Image (cartoon, rainbow, N blue to C red; front, top):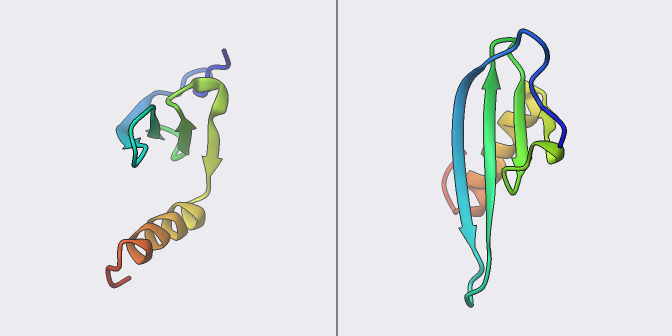
Length: 74
């Protein structure tokens, strides 16, 4: 398993979102990490080997996309 944090880096923020299948079955956990080096990491199934780094612009775009999908104003 790959460690998403670099040497000397530490978590400054952590939030897990758990989505469930509409008709039962499994769940998917998305883990969002903020780091001491101003990195934003998104982990699928909360697995460190799936870590993807988001730029600030991508993080804002993701937030706006989720708000729009929920029918909320941007």
